[in-house]
Amino acid sequence: MVFWIAFLTAFVLSIICTPMAIKLAPMIGAVDIPKDSRRMHTKPMPRFGGLAIFIGAMVSISWVTWYGWPILEQQFQQMGAIILEQPTRHMLGALLGGTLIYILGVIDDLKGMPAKVKFLGQALIACVPYAFGVRIQFVTNHFGSSFGDTHSYFAGALCFFITIIWIVGITNTVNLIDGLDGLASGVAAISSLCLAYTAYIHGSYLPALAMLALAGGALGFLPYNFHPAKIFMGDGGSLFLGFMLATLSIVGPVKGATIMAEIIPVLVLGLPIFDTAFAIFRRLVNHRPIMEADKGHLHHRLMAAGLGQRRTVLTLYGISGVMGVAAVLFSRDLFVETAGLIGIAAMYIYVFLTDANNWRLQIKAVNIAHEEKQQKKMEKKLKTINIIEDISKEDVCGVGECMEDECTEDESKEDESKEDVPQEDGSKE
Image 1 (cartoon, rainbow, N blue to C red):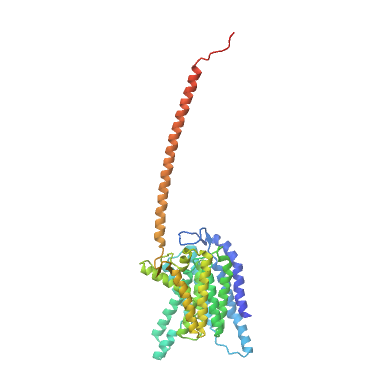
Image 2: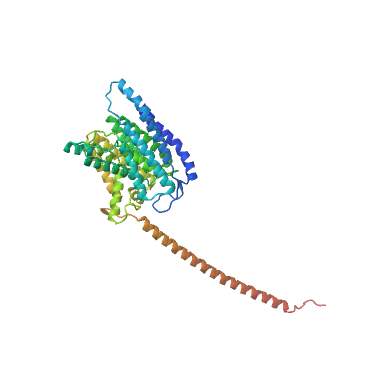
């Protein structure tokens, strides 16, 4: 019952708060105006939907951490079940960090923020859950078994950097796939549900409840965000979803502090991780800045193939679901089945990245900055042509008016000459 309450609380709050966010967005200036061809929408859209996801997920996770889990723990104790220690303190770090990352995203939505400043802010906020014990422990345990000190300085430093890179990296992967209506929220919901199930079957009940709450918040927002979207989640929503996925996925490791346990969230988030990694590789190969936007993401390629927004998003949902099931099977030591599903997902991604007449991967992508410059040049040329056409039309009209004036003058002269000629009276006396 507690699991259903965690999910439905976030779902209902999100679906109620989204219409409020739609009305609030224009009042505070949280509107996304299409400025380049990379954007798929053609009219201004409110981008404050992250508020609904944030409220739904945070209220539900807070209730689960301090009220829902104690109730569930008592029920397990009455049944005589053996319960693993749940990371309540870690959840506080995730909640605090999630609040800060959402505020950072809202500032970026309202005021705009340089990429380097935003990246630095993400790194600093990622230190918050680390301070509360949310960290990738296998690094520390690995060096501890070798040198006899489980908390050696070298192991601790390496653990810190890997944890920060993981949190910041996953936060940005979700932000980068937020390019089509419903894509980021749907992929985040699928990933959360798969991680929740994986945590549940291995006894990590509190992280499972938190993941269900996160999925409920994303799914409550999805009806308003699916194509044709009425609202966007904005950077506040995408950064919040990415941060919480990254943090909660390492709050309660499935098999303790081992490398194998850390592969599970990598598999679940395989689609956004691959899309981000391939984008970085593509830009390096083309000698472009890593932070520069282009139209080479998976969803851009599917759109260019003519699938349309809905079918593109549903296709990527399917790949994300396959990777999520692969992670569940991996956690049950079903490695052959896991490899088969990964192969299926990789085959489809390969199809998306290749051309019908060329089996090699298409590394090049549309350069947004270059495309905008070309578009401005074309606009200037069109303006010049229009001005020339207007001038020529005016000249033609002027000649026509002159000819009309001459014709009217000739007609008036003819009338005057006719009046001067005496008329003969044909009547006889």
